[in-house]
Image (cartoon, rainbow, N blue to C red):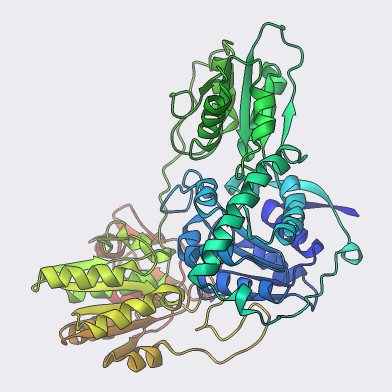
Length: 606
């Protein structure tokens, strides 16, 4: 054993390795990404790891590994669970052989997501047991227990770290590699009565699942994962308690240290709920405050238990207005809620407020090729009735002014379907669907097939920057390498599109502005489904040292370079445009736009 200072995601990865995991797969998504990346860095030769093309494929791969007796970990964020839900629901009915842990990192806030989904509610819906760690240290231990639990009860198991667990740091005592469990898969054994999901088998297994989960209410009540922290140092007549789970439990424990220690129920396995333990906790209490993120899950469970057992305890939380209905909890917000619950008056904040922090909205990087791609389409379609259907990724930032090039954004790959339907309803509207190169492989292909098959009319724009940029530059099928370190043949987006039946497929460097604009004009005017691939590498991968410079004597102060493209490396001072050499990547887009040729240098693209 030794100590390491670890991010929560790193701790989960090392916990999985310590448990003898054989297969790790997933799709990148904040706040889950570092788990798989850490496995790739710290694994030995016996562990297979991959970034799958999407979460559904990852879940199916993990399921197959489990069929063969391997221990498998599949990673995603809460949005990815929607994509993976089809195979997951069926896996719960079929059951597993090797331990299968489904890590879903929830994002209260949301900090970097479209939704605030709560995987605890999905666990109850899918009937899949869930472990909810309250710290990085607990997550390290819990993922190991989850593998054992999965094999014992032949079920997938959720591990649900939230952002503060995934991205928090702690010094953790972990096992040395020579102490790791060695798990050798037994191999796949043919048995159609077990592995083929016919209705009769599903009916029988549904009954088995319900019986198992009824048993798990008692199992989890007796598990050390769930416990009651007794009240200490308070008057005996205080008949109040707190129920908490996940990282909110950590905030509650901090509040106990400063305000007084009410009886506290720690819920680490919200589904199936530790019912008997909850009854013991509730006995003798008049009121209980539930502190949790995001749904009122614990709150509803305790209300149900009070009704079932005839308990008179009043349950407070989100549904009673004592806790916020949405968003992330914090140490201060929890302390304030607990203090109000205990009728403790906290000292007023200092009268003098600190000055507000400057507003720094997210923006495309200086030199980002997506800026040039959006601007080329905008210039080519100027004056026409258009709809620009966006997608999830760095290019979502194309919605910001002055580009203003994202009219819709729903979920990964949805822009293709939206563009198809808008054009169906308004034949005079030119519709564009933007998608990144990684997202193209993850979720765009069915939309393209649907569009070609149903004779749609729109332009697909693939923004190919040779990486999965927003989540940290992970490889994908078009990059030519894998997480196993293998150099493989790049899968051609052009070939796929032509194979599907898209007859007009053009590839152009968006940083060659004149050619890019002409390509958009020519291609968008064609009938049917057509595609433009804007290919230029992400500036974070290939930074140029050839910055542009502006001749102040030649600059006329027209601000076109600033007003048109919104590059963060450009500003205006003393009546002249100015380049921040620390940010400029020499893309030359501003140079190509300058009406008086006052900008020089950079790398030539035109």
